Image (cartoon, rainbow, N blue to C red; front, side):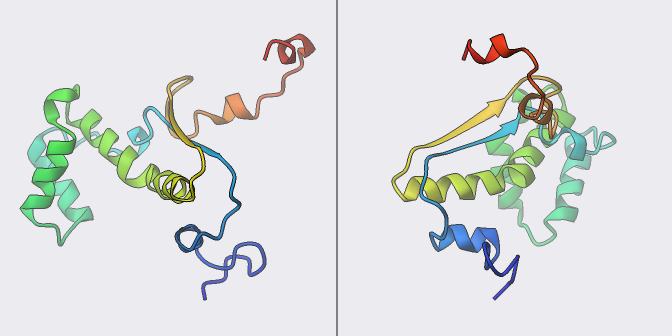
Length: 144
């Protein structure tokens, strides 16, 4: 057993979700529009350099993996390899936890929603100023 805290979360969160050990309530998950921006290498400015970077991350991947990757994220849909890579990073690294959480909740028959947050900087963590901002104007609460 992997002890996370031993009391509330007794195993890795991914395992807990797989086993259905979570509160059964509707769920909304999100990610920021440019999640992968901060993690993308700006010097990989050609498809060849980009693939070399991916090969370092996925050293055992075969060409079929990369063919499928570029099929899912076609170069012509992005304004350069940087933005293509940023989108892949955002989906591969950042969105994985939300995917597993949303899948487990949906499999339990509960309402599940996923949104892309396209406000503020749209970078990783862009939701924080909106979620944690103090609202000192009491008239704002009456509008919602």
